Amino acid sequence: MGDLDIALPKNMWKMDLARTGEYCLNKTRNGKVDRRNAIEVIIVGAGVAGSALAYTLGKEGRRVRVIERDLNQPDRIVGELLQLGGYLKLLELGFQDSVHEIDAQRVFSYVLYKNRKNTRLSYTLKHFQSDVAGMSFHNGRFIQRMRHKAASLPNIEQGTMTSLIEENGTIKGVQYKTKGGRESSAYICSPYYIVCDDCFSNLRYPLCDLKVNVASYFVSLALENCKLLLVSKALSYANYGHVILAYPSPILFYPISNTEIRCLVDVPGQKVPSLSNGEMAIYLKTVVAPQVVFILTIDQGNIRTMPNRSMHVAPHPKPGALSMGGMIVALFDIVVLKDLLRPLYDLHDASALCVYLESFYTLRKPVVSTINTLVGALYKVFSASPDPARKEMRQACFDYWSLEGIFSNGLISLLSGLNPRPISLVLHFFVVAINGVERLLLPFSSPKSPKRIWTGARLISGATSIIFPIIKAEGIRQMFFPITMPAYYRVPPVD
View 1: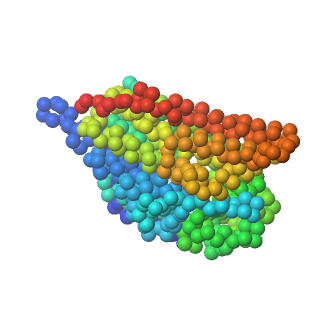
View 2 (view 1 turned 135 degrees about the vertical axis):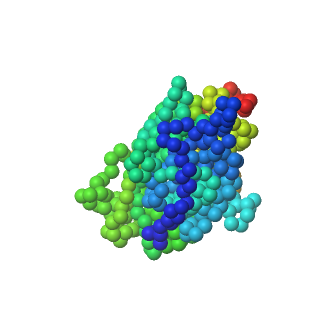
View 3 (view 1 turned 120 degrees about the horizontal axis):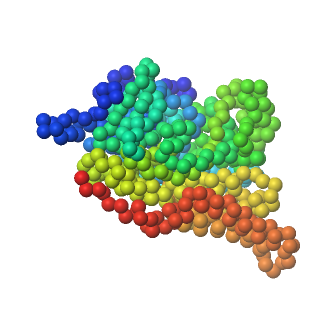
């Protein structure tokens, strides 16, 4: 099933393109601009974000042009697990059929393993229809299905973006190379240019301050027709992701088809063992395999790596342009952007539109900051450390997730995007830390060594040092008090 390729029909992409280097403007006899057939929005990138946005804006009546450098089915090792909150947004945007006919698997959350013990976390699904859950799949198949959907409305062309066309501080269009290598350009008359390209794209840099940190690498293997073992105990929870708190950092398993399981091994550091000379295979066999058995797959090869990047973005609002991306966060973003653009008949006033859409960055912040902060904090907590305080924090988090009710449900709601409230995240995180201190100091009736008291104090201090820098990078005011931001109260410009 791993080599299933979803091809797009050759006539799928309608290419009623503007004449090279010319504005898409028609003028009436009295000399006024006729915008009835002009391109309103250019979207660069037809991945999850670009395809979903193109279809959504097309349904809203916008005239959209999409430029994608490669329309072949992508082959990626990330973007394969869609959390419940993201799937609900997918349904809201009308993309429910994008997970059909690609051997997608329903996912009910995670099982967490530590020291031969496990605890199962589950989404609270009682308020949803029976077919609602998280979804996992081959990323490339999913994207091709989304492109099929998007192609029913906008014009899409295969081409490689080279630069932005800017006049007097306003983005007026894009310069790109066609599939055949011909230099071309597309202009927008009622301008909006949106970058939905991937995180490696240099097109984002003119639109934001982008701070990228590579903390580790994902090493990927696809396990076919196998039975995974964890210290001689089968990972027997069907339709769950499995997170192993291994040494030196977590290992993740989740199904991507009916016969395949994706294994992502996190390798800390900015440099990984070499694939070409066999160092990576040796690392997996000697460090990872004793904790999780998959030596046969290592010997079969097909090991792939990808940097695990943390990215903090400070947007530079520029007339005529907007940047977005990702998967679950992007689906939330598209719903926000759709609602903001709906009252606008005409997008021609780029300066007024730029001021108005500053509210986009404010309205999206609670969702994106909650997910980013929790993922970043959990990664640091779950990574092994010789520090006794960090070890206690790791155990406290495992114990907390083992509790039922509001404790485990609260954390999984935050992680899945169902509860995008930053204050809930901070409260849960420090309750985890306090739970760790309680383990160290209770019962109070028995004397405690100064070492245990010191470890408890350092546990609280360590929890603070983990979460506060992430919150600071996301923006404290934007994250917790968005209603105090002037952009929160922007009203649509008058046409």
